[in-house]
Image 1 (cartoon, rainbow, N blue to C red):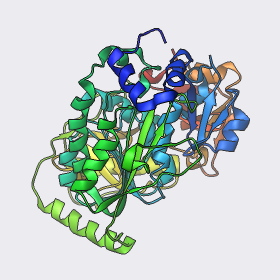
Image 2: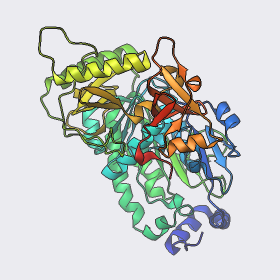
Image 3: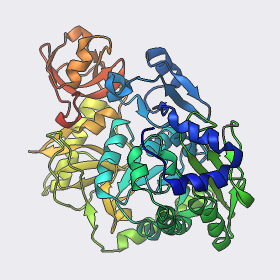
Amino acid sequence: MAAQLPSSFSERMMDMLGTDYNQFADSYKETPYGGVRVNTLKISVESLKALSTLGLEPIPWCPTGFYTENGARPGKHPHYHAGLYYIQEPSAMAPVELLNIEPGDRVLDLCAAPGGKSTQISAKLLGEGLLVSNDLHPERTKALAKNLELYGVRNGIVLNESPDHIAAAFPLFFDKILIDAPCSGEGMFRKDEDMVKQWDSGTPAKYASMQRDILRSAATALAPGGTLVYSTCTFATEENEEIIAEFISEHPQFSVVAVGGTGSFAPGFGELSGTARLWPHKVKGEGHFMAVLQHGGTKRSMEERDHLEVKLNESARARTTTPKSAAHVKSSNKSEGRRGKEGKPSHKPTGGADRGRQVSGDEQALTAYGNFVRDQLGWEPQGYPVLFGDHLYISPLPKERLNGLKTIRPGWYVGQIRNGRFIPGHPMATALHPEESCRSVSLSSTNHEAISYLKGETLSISQERLSIRIGSAQKGYVLVCIDGYSAGWGKWQDGILKNEYPAGWRWM
């Protein structure tokens, strides 16, 4: 690396590493490693390996992660725009693997932007359960929401809240919590020279205070018997082992679960040797610290959990608090770009209204959505329909559960009601599989068509190339796929595919 390591940092690392220091310092002369993680919500590891030309080498601590060759540009391939993989620093893939997520879990990613770990969590949930992804910084939640949309997440909620507010709204609620804590970033010095420039000897102490507060809030939100993973990308013990030791002393119901694994993980220091470190001179990746914390309480059965959820939902409905926000993150898609006024959420099933009575705006909107679902999908997505203005989401939670919270995305954004018609949103398309749409077409990544589509161009597509479910009309919305994996919408008529790919997402 070109930037000089701060002298006080180097002196501390010498004391920490002893005879290993020279090898550690030499690692900063190496080029940082790049990686991608397969999005198994859309494609299997085996299928991507067969399809990709990236020259993938397995990352030992993540079964869906792969190193990419030096000079590879995975972001400049149609497969990236189809959400088949996430570009991620290899060490950053480790914390989620330690959470042991199972389908159906309720998971909180407390410091989630830009969304790499949230997309990794979502793939493990397999569309079941719930993911709440939060970030304290409003601007960063835009990238977080977009990445969850690109990777086809249907059961996710995006918040822009303080951890203590989330804990107050969801006490003893989550089965798994990830805290990829804000930190001094020492482990990223090789990868990001700006981190070196921003660091001084007081930086670790500044972040340690913030980390304590985040951990305390997470302890309130974790259900009995749940698992919490705390991680940083720094070397400072005051942000790592010391933080965990202090937390355990304050919360005796928690214990450290020793991290085993692939042999890549080095033990933490002192009495917390059960925690784990990734050192840049020992693995092909940047510096990371991880601790797995287990709540010692008795884990609730699914029946007990569901019964408690019914009571919480009833309590939420009884409150009259108006939501702080129902912010629809502005998108460059013309059909999604306007922020609607907040409206009362509707949880009624879609379908027509009774004759002879006045039909509300919400009912009209849900009827339009129901007509689209019948004609375009042939099946109905599960969840709570939530309307904000003219924007419709399918949420994994009743809207009342989000009252008082700054909500960026209350669920899967499916589209907008315009002039009594339902206009499907881009995130609806990216989360679908070809067989879930009555009409679809697949473009090849090896010729100009896929890139032309991603650039927003109109395409000539013969009727013979369309995959049309029996009984469905030829004309209408078409799920456009790349090599068989969904990328967006088009509208087909008489051999012409009108492009519906959002302007802000296009290939540049």
